[in-house]
Length: 110
View 1 (tube, rainbow, N blue to C red):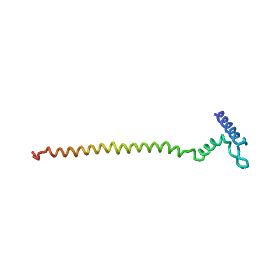
View 2 (view 1 turned 180 degrees about the horizontal axis):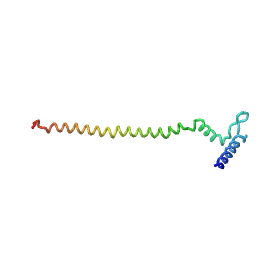
View 3 (view 1 turned 120 degrees about the vertical axis):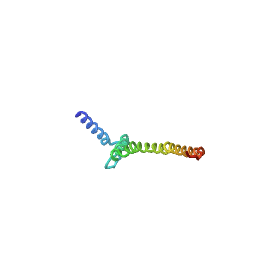
View 4 (view 1 turned 60 degrees about the vertical axis):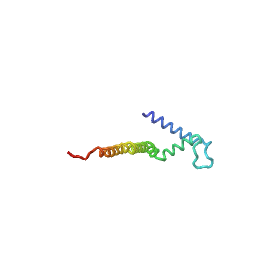
């Protein structure tokens, strides 16, 4: 565990040295030089990632909220089309059978 911690510290120190010591790609005359262009893209993405609280909101919105939204849409469609259709079919069948039944009753009671 200590070896892994030490190795990650060394990698971090080497990476930061590579970013900030290489002066060839920096903006000349700037008090805070930019990272090299090769690292600039990755550096910008990492900076945005950490600046936005590790993108937890986007991750949550893209996974949990999207899954709940799609599931609720599917259940709403199932309720609207299948369940309401079955209920309307039973209602129409009972009205139709009631109309047929009134023609078969003679009106005589026993």
